[in-house]
Amino acid sequence: MDNRKSVAYFCMEYGIENNVKLYAGGLGILAGDYMKEACDQGYPIVGIGILWKQGYGEQLIDQETGMPYDAYKNRVYPFLEDTGVTVSVCIKKRDVKIKVWRYRAHGVDNLYLLDTDIEGNDGEARWITGQLYGWFGEERVAQEMVLGIGGVRAIRALGLNPSMYHFNEGHALFAGFELIREKLSRGMRFREALQETRKEVVFTTHTPVPEGNEQHPIDRLIYMGANLNMTKRQLKAIGGDPFNMTAGALRLSRVSNAVSDLHRITAQKMWKKVKGRCEIIGITNGIHIPTWVDRKMLELAEEYNGTKAAEEELWNRHMHNKDALIAFIEKRTGIKLNRDVLLIGFARRAAPYKRSGLLLSDPDFIEPLLRGRKLQIVYSGKAHPLDDTGKGIITGITGMARQYPDSIVFLENYDMEIGRMMTRGADIWLNNPRRPQEASGTSGMKAAMNGVLNVSTLDGWWPEACDHGVNGWQFGDGYQSDNIEKADMHDLKALKACLVNEVIPTYYEDRSKWVEMMVSSIKTTREPFGMKRALDEYYKRMY
Ligand SMILES: *Cc1c(COP(=O)(O)O)cnc(C)c1O
Image (cartoon, rainbow, N blue to C red; front, side, top):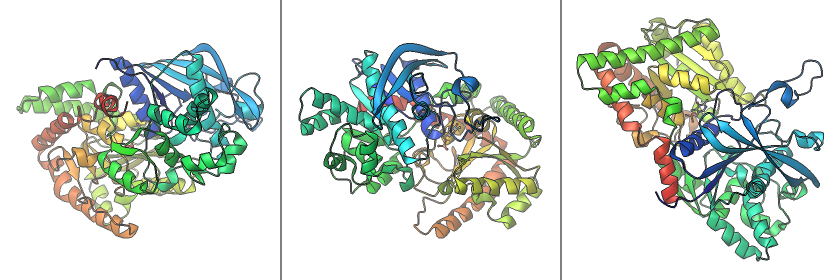
């Protein structure tokens, strides 16, 4: 690709390294993988993000004062380079100073992180970059003003001159406001400034769950100063009233993408009523393979030739990864799982549509399998401390884990390390979202490339990859219903049948077929679901 355009990529979170707590979940992991692949391929991409003091859901409280820890007391990242650049944004009628750091480590070298916790800011301003995804409206708007408006100003101050601005999720939308303001200040008319801005912005939409799409009262945006002097009418024309960040981004972009083909169809329906929005195309997510996949496993799959020796070697490598997971679980929980029993992995943020408890919901089915040592399950998950529904979901699973201490384990605080261990060492990767609410689901890609067979509803990326009984399994046949109970009953029945009739017999009775399926899982996914393909597609179809 010659003449590659330079791109500035905006995201609230980046999952780059496990101990660098700048991410909450899938969105951040995607952004981290994207930055790593851009670096590997030498693409002219810079990332803009925020230097969070506390990670998602972390509550680091000083025992003595009861106040949140001072950032520099508890977390210092020595690899951050001081760019010497400071910019400012007027938030709630006072100037907030923003320091710009450069992240150059862990295979990333062009990521700039914004930080308000600096001398000269008042206490409230210093806390803007305190905790990822503040839950309160004003706090969130302030965070997004730092990311969007501060981000564009940082780009200018650093002397970078990107030709495209990519908003990964609607959080970055205020960057579009700043791009408009710049043009107005050069004397352009509003309509023209809007049109010109639209030519340089692209957008990725993620969640098909309505609550996941943030909105704010227009008055709040004005009160905070996020409007940058745009009038109420102008704001309303962009994001509606209340102001919806996704609708706004769809109107401020040249083109946008959903993160799988099924999600494209869902998103087009969901945002049908947004007049004047850009087109939504589908670009399925991918993963940064060196981060997530066991290289040895990739090699063995490539060399596999159907002989007994090749089969044995690949299986032994899998057992090596499974043993590593079992040891990891034992270290964390004291529970030692059995290496000869089919191990199901399930790790998800505790959102209701992901149905973490589905498999456990019929005791007459699951109990004999657990007692008879036909299967064992490792769960992981995380809920925000203020999210009672999510916490309830996790309590349900940990309750079951106490009843079956030898066969069900729960790993607390799902993070990149747990994700990596589980998507390498489980035998199967269970994914049972209510179709069509899972936008993509990159954990399944990690599993697939490690030879961990997916057992999944046809949601997110899986309809594009699944060859049933060849590289994994689907259950539910793509059934959808607005009646939640009906949908859950349908899928549970299908899941049970798939486990009992296909997965369990293959695992215990036909090792050769299992290994062949592992090989085919790896070979059919490594190119189409690698980040290289996704990045190239962004260049071809978006930038
Ligand atoms: C891969 C990964 C995700 C995203 O996985 P989904 O399939 O979208 O749930 C989230 N969190 C962590 C820690 C991961 O490693």
